[in-house]
Amino acid sequence: MPQTPLTAPSALDAQHIVVGEGIEPADAAAVNAGLDALEQHREVKTPVIQRFARSVLPPVGAIAIIIGVWQWAYTMGFKPDYVLPSPATVFGTIGDLFASGRAFEVLWTSLSRGVFGFALSVVIGTVIGLILSRNKWLRAGFGPLLTGLQSLPSVAWVPPALLWFGLSNATYYAVVLLGAVPSMANGLLSGADQVPPLYSRVGKVLGLGRWGYIRHVLMPAALPGYLAGLRQGWAFAWRSLMAAELIVTTSKLGFGLGQLMDQGRSLSEMDLMLAAVILIFVVGVGIEVLFFRPIERVVLRTRGLQPAGR
Image 1 (cartoon, rainbow, N blue to C red):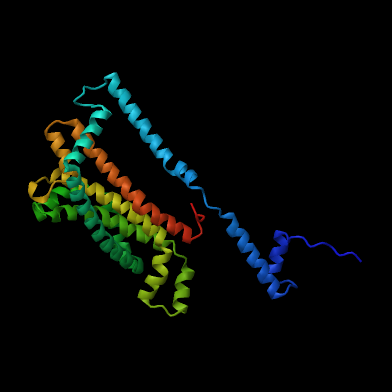
Image 2: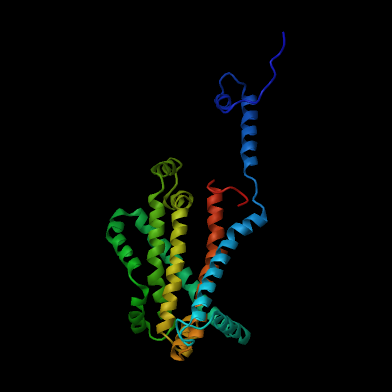
């Protein structure tokens, strides 16, 4: 009697095999291993050139379009040269700033303030977010206040901070904290609200205490929302710092990007002001690309939301 040739199991047959309908455990394990290998095979790494074209070329093209429109507006003479300088003039000013070493000075001054203020905001915002997420009464009282502080323009805190702390770095850090902490705390609260209640019950069954639950359950599960809060917090921190540097100007505290822009305004040098704006923009984009984007890819990949190699 001729034997029927063996064929690959269909998806429905594989499902039946996995649940063990009349199949030996060893066979079911072999089929599961084959399905896992097939799934891994689908996650083909994207070539470097394709990744470069997909991630780098679009923003470069957008920047080229903006510069082209800028050059066209300058050529058409919509505004005088001292109001709308050409792209070549502004980029030449940036080159002069780097050649003289002044750009490195202002970048270091502002970046050191921004990073230190952001680190303080992370600590304070995380603590506040954890406390409010674990106490519904405190959250009911202080939650709306955090939302109100988050919507308040950070520049509004500069005059009070200047009166409270005078001409000191504490003024800058106070404005940064008041601008960034509410966003980080709200981000953690938003992530905590998305943690399934089942996780809490499983933590209690496993005997996790309050700190164990926060460390092993709450923070990992709330990480996407928390990361979004950190990203928004950095944006608020950087904007708050620039607002403070524009208003609080003194040679005793160092010369940052905000002071550079204010100097351009005082001297009526639009090319210097635009150069400062471009440097502020580059720092903001650089932090996003070099810090937050890699962390986001790791988080998405570990949760199976982004294939490996992308």
